[in-house]
Image (cartoon, rainbow, N blue to C red; front, side, top):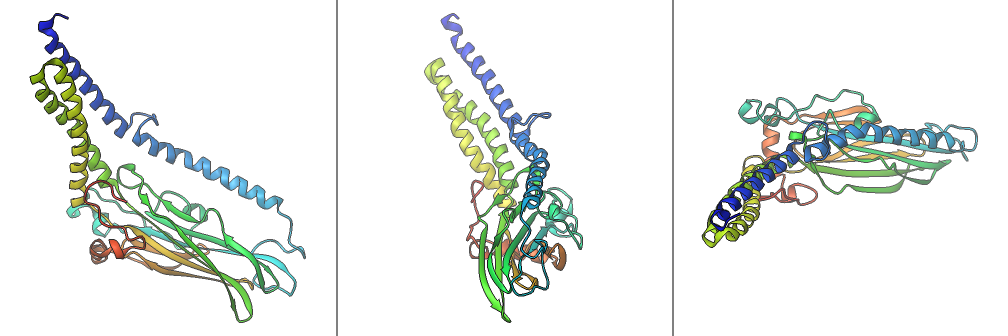
Length: 346
């Protein structure tokens, strides 16, 4: 191009590049069609594929059980409520805490009761299945503990957590994954009334980060465009090359500033502490099983199950949600998580 048109040509090129970058950034966050090559698509891929992963795990487990040798004495390797001296058997059981948001709570009814940003769950049934407890829908979080002990007469010879014990989460607002925290598991043998046993405890929790992620995405996009424009305008004082350099430098800084501003606004308006529960399961060599919900966050509601049958229910509404939002940070949660101001937080 002729020197007198260089500035115009560079400006046009930079403008086209900016439009393309913004479009691609937006497409990655929102996704398109059935494509999994995007942030939203990654969530779809996980949701679409999970039944297949679970089916494979169930098939492997079933096949493993079919190949396991029968215990001495011909007794099936299941929970035995009465055993004789010298009998070898396995006792297993489960404890499950299903955390759910009551539609009547402020979080369930949305912003000022309008339904905007509402997130609620159906009340769990009185009896559940393991597939439900280890699924990804019908609740906010599931703390599922499954454990076993091996017994010779009344003496415990081994035991442990089943590998699928842990935290299960449903996607939060906009299909965004919640932030999990380290699961803590402990086991301790005991003797009670001359019968051996083992006590298992499991602590799990997570925090929704949907508002901060969404706010950061919007802020980053706005900052991306605005920063590029301002940078290009400043750089134009130094000619075509200055325009290009100013654009990309401004775009980078605008991206960072926009993300910080977007997450800051979202955190100020919608910022929720961790949701967590700690469950306990005691297995005795004589087949007795006892479950306990040791402690939990003040919000949301929680249904507690022993061997998949409901033992108790805690319903959290406005007062519980308010107390949780005020006291759920720092010492108010087992991991000492502090309230973030900018960014998504820990």
